Length: 347
Image (cartoon, rainbow, N blue to C red; front, side, top):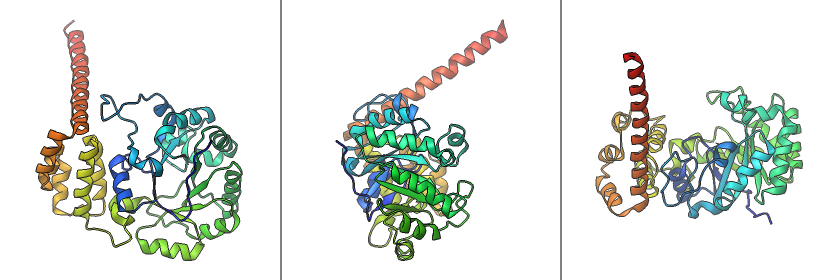
């Protein structure tokens, strides 16, 4: 029996590679997000993964989740194969409440693999992927697309997607060749909403503040809204009240990352992305130079919080131990290669 999830009248954290990991998703939910999407993960990668609990993974972590987010967590898969897509969905079925197929990523890796935006020009392949997931995954299925060159072509694609039995469809209002600096085409949403009536349409693109959501709702009567860059810059955008100051959000994020034992490289990357529009803030230079949780906690006066976590938080300690093992293994590999090359030169 397929589980249910309501996609109507929702404000949603968009799938964002590297940024939308566990601590940001949990913070988004605390601030009021109705649903949160995982970063895109390629089907073969998640299929080959091994399940670990309580931060005990010693290898690269592909996907982390927490029971508290399960009822609102959508797993986005990158795929070009119906069978692999289904295997990936079944792999994470117990951890999430929905599956989303990425049909919009314009990056070279996705396109060359027949994934992401490549599926926009291969509708039969996309249809077979969605149909297989809808019929066999036991989870609600959605997809996220980009618009095509004309509104008529976009609608034709949307009608095909609607026919597969998906529960909702997210539309990013740019073509695969357009970039964030180019304004999105909000005018497409009214046309799609008027012609696709059986499922919610989720609008994505150029939603930077609450007033944008109100404005787009009035323009198009679109059902739900998916926020990406604005949530990356300040995830408190999901609050019904005005957003919090950046430094307050950053501090909350660091605490959340420590609480769940997020790996340091991902935490630092996300923090630097949060400052993408505020790189002149005095703490930013120190953040860029930081090399550990110890460094970043000094910047934000969180040393007592970190010390307490290192003493009492088993998950955080496990993650630090796993990182240490990874670093040692990588260093051993480097030393082995270096010694081998040295012996060849001496010979």
